[in-house]
Image (cartoon, rainbow, N blue to C red):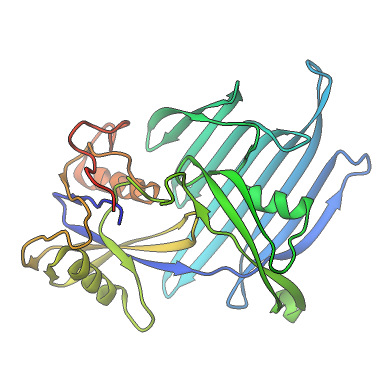
Length: 340
């Protein structure tokens, strides 16, 4: 279990995971063959929720007399539930060699009015990654060997060599929502008949693509608000009450729905329901081995889970806080002492 944060403003989260079906689309190539563009429609439960545009442009590097590829992927999704409508746009951009080695990376994640950008150049197997978001800039250095691919590694791998039933394949890739390098494992499961847009049905290979951070835990060491997944048949409020009792040992009173956010994590595209909780009964007990910390702005525990950053910004607006909302680096004694 990853660490949790509690704030002087009582608040907790319930998370509902969203499954997205296989996309379908079309491709186009320029007359000179230097650029290829494809458009894909994304469907969820038979309803179109967005599009994915992929552009691959061949360039010439005059300094080294070699060909390069500039790859841009833009995913634009809109979700609606009752009166809530949330739009998320994710843009992946890389400059690559012909064999797929990344030279430059630029990722932008836009959810509502919030944008987080990660960008940098790979020099001598090191990526100096600049992180912009919430009016702050951080900088990290990542080890980046020639085998590491960009955030669209699964698509690139399948495009170069289609997967077969029963086949598995691993690729090292950059995980945008965590700004870390992990491993994606592509697993060819079985052929299925999938209904796409316009009631068109096609035989497609079902591919599972779990992503693992170097320590095997995607969210190890990241701080977030308590909460969890909404189970079938539960309301957001019921899920929140159950999760807080299971994780923290408390029984909450009425929960007030506050905000809705959609975030693209490596394991799933999730809709986050943020609720304010103003009263509870019982003593806090860390039932899942996690750490807990009461915080005020700017938050000192680090690193903060990306899906939590917009919440800090909302709190800053409500409280009139000016300046950074969270620490750029872990503070001694404030971070998680144990990861479980």
